[in-house]
Length: 233
Image 1 (cartoon, helix red, strand yellow):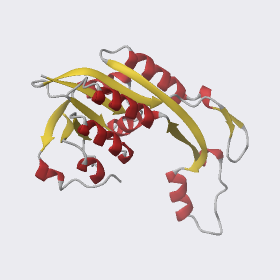
Image 2: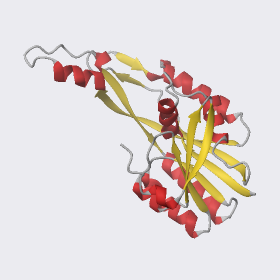
Image 3: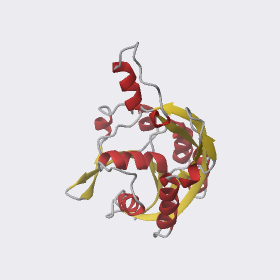
């Protein structure tokens, strides 16, 4: 049996599961955990650990974009969700939580607002309101934590394979290091999502997971099938 570490880029996994499962909200801990357990081939692999990387929720108070009223992120539903996710996921078997930082970059127009502005007569725009904007939040420190864990797992030969669930090509150097150390790198294609060519180039296997009839199904891609997979949008 090959020993496997599963590394989950939390924000990416949340987005993919929400789209694939057609959820109205971010996936709860049980959904993410069930997804993780179904990423391995149980006939030839065993889990060493599942690493979940995500930024701590942003908790500060900022000004709203139009009214300049105060907005307290600490009172937002996202903070409650994040705290519950970390707590419940951290109690599961094999799970290790790696927390980064979340920073506030400002406010951006919602897609629906942009479409409305495009369709309205130029001489009769409706005034913008606070509700027309959404916060722009970025994670910091997640990439470096993934890189450090890969370096540890690979240099110490703790596992035989690393299953990486991400869409970020910044991890290419990390993947290259693991492969040079003799560790196989497996990428995961979730549902109908695609994978960047740069990630494909530096992986050993591509594994597809699909949700069908209430359960996750696993399939491997052969080398010739990779040519039909193009970049993320």
